[in-house]
Image (cartoon, rainbow, N blue to C red; front, side, top):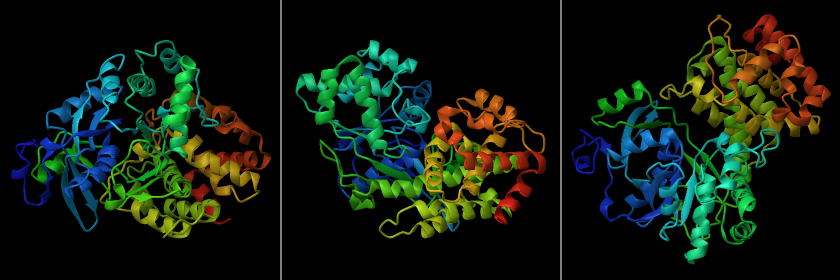
Length: 488
């Protein structure tokens, strides 16, 4: 059955469908970056509110600024912006059609439709999932980098910007001038202090062209921090076949694990939906929740994916079945990461390690090693390197954390242990591959990528441990090196 408004009541009884009148929904949110994660996470929370008869004036209008977004818009438009979510649980599969998105802004150079949509006074939140690498940050210190060509263009052409942030600045200017008030800017990306980072980028960009506007934004616009969590694999042929088997003809279905978490700081200048009514946590301790998640789950993903890629394992659950990789993850997580993590309400760091172990090991989730290892230059610098700096400054154990960096460097040589090639998997893959191969003979060359490592490259203890592990990886291989670490 083709997924459309007119067909949802005819879908198989096993598929849950919206019970609310979608034609009566009105917009309250523009979301930039309508990928799988957004549709399985934020859109689902809002959908569940709507199923309870709430938040009918908070519907989502999708948006994007990349070529990819145009194709995504066309697919979603053809099915009235509906999405089938498929929950993959070892005990069984279930499906639900989510209807909280009601439109998608046309993609256009200069972002005029997006700017116009955000000036609509009904829009009270503009949210984003543009990935960790999409915020124009210096990789070493995660601060706004105003010298990027796209940012420089937007500063010179504020009425026809290229970036999502330029469009946000233009829309806020129009709303200020019209007296229609600000909207909340909410990042939903895996970044520590994502609200603070979004605020720095938006105000920093505004300040390049209009310092008075920048001050107005700082005084009137809110940027809540949030922590988001749900494992959502990429959609490929298997997922498209699965949704067909469930009786739904959906061009863009989304699979996800049977776990979600959303922790949000209650800082909204123009109101918000009551997400807490459907399981979100409203808390002033977002930083503690996100530190636990970023360092144990996101960092754990890199600890698992990099050796798995080198030895030729395809999925994260298969990597967790490996006789050594699971033990590597647990030892680093428990011995070197958990001691730096604060307990949050309802969960200790040790309990969270056990939870992550179960989630990574879920065989129903076909989460590829390649997807998890993608953009390591952002993911390592966001999840693991801040922790290594902290541990090094406290003279805490860093053997396994140093090994994690050696595994990343070994993976970036571009060749697996079986001799097969690792396809480019990072925006700066060419640089990483060149330096990784140089580091075979000179390990320090890898650490001299100061944009990632900064002063860590000068830390004698970290340097020595990294060099030791990298040399052993090249001489003896992944498994022998992991065994050496596990026996320390």
